[in-house]
Amino acid sequence: YSYGANKKVTFVLSGNRSSNGITLQNEDYTTTNVIAVTGYFGIFAPTNKILTTRLTKTALAQTNTLTVQMDATFDWNVGDITLKYDHYGAPTIAGNAEGYGAGDFDRRAVVTKLNRNILVTTGGTDGWGASIYVTEYTIEVPFGGDVFPVQYRGVLNITGLWCDFCGQVDTNHAGLQIENLTPDGNMSYVNNSVFS
Image 1: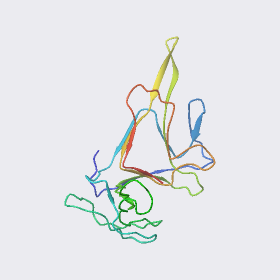
Image 2 (image 1 turned 90 degrees about the vertical axis):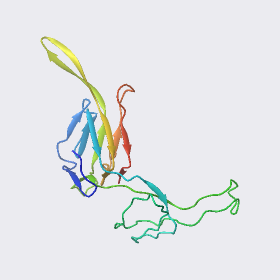
Image 3 (image 1 turned 135 degrees about the vertical axis):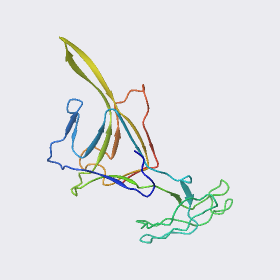
Image 4 (image 1 turned 60 degrees about the vertical axis):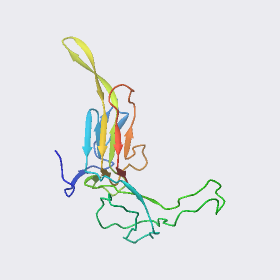
C-alpha cells in the first residue's frame, strides 16, 4: 500500500522485560518489542529529491530555525524542528588558514532531510525499546516419517523509517540487528532512516 507524503503510520510494539517474548534460533534471541524478519519485510516512505544540504548559519540548541543552502531544485517544506545540540554553520576555511594543510575545508554542518511518515516505537519507558531483528535460521520439519530442513532468511528493505525509543538496556538487542545471514540471496538495505 502506498501512502502520500502527508500521511503517517505508527506501529507501537508492546511488552516489557517481564513479558513473554518470541524465541528464535533455539533461544539465542528471546525478547519482546521486536519485529523479527525471517522473510521479506519492506517499508517505503516518500522521500525528497534533495536529501542533503549544508547550514549557512550556525543553529543553536533549543531553536527551531535552520538556515540552509538552497537552489531552484530544493524540494523541502518549512516545518517545526527543535535542535537538541548546537550545529555549526560557519563558512569555509580557505587554503591553510588554520593549519589544516589540505586546501579549502568546509566546516558547515551537513543537514539531511529525514521523512518521518512511518514510525516504529514502543509504549515502554523502562529502557525496553523497539528492535528490528533480521536473521536466517533453519528448522527441521517432520513429514511422512522423514525430516526436512526448512530455511528462513530475512531480507529487510526500508526507506524513510523512523524507529524511536530503540534498543533494550542491559542486553545486546540494538534498534537494528542484522546477523547470521549467508551471502546468498537478496541483500538488505536501509536508506534515509533514523534510529533514536
